[in-house]
Image (cartoon, rainbow, N blue to C red; front, side):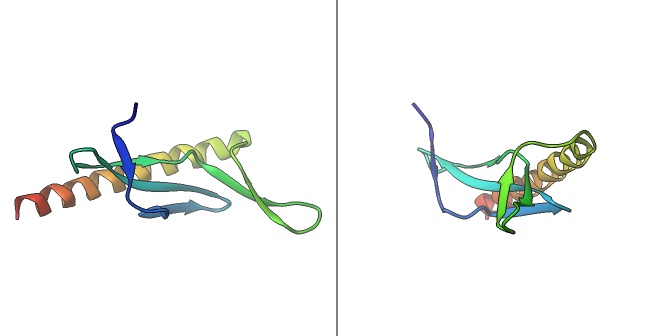
Length: 90
């Protein structure tokens, strides 16, 4: 059983670094309290036919980029949580 429902089909934020990106999603508990989650870091690439795809497979050096993206996502989520808290007090 889950205590969440998704508000939108689009993330509230995307953070990118080169070919890597992470998405932040805003959800609500059954009681209407907001909370945030992230996707796994994804890497985009082109195949032999020049079509774009995404994967969660990363090279060793891309792991450092992924760690940075997760840290940035954490900071962004904390900012949004603080904004939600301030808005609920108003």
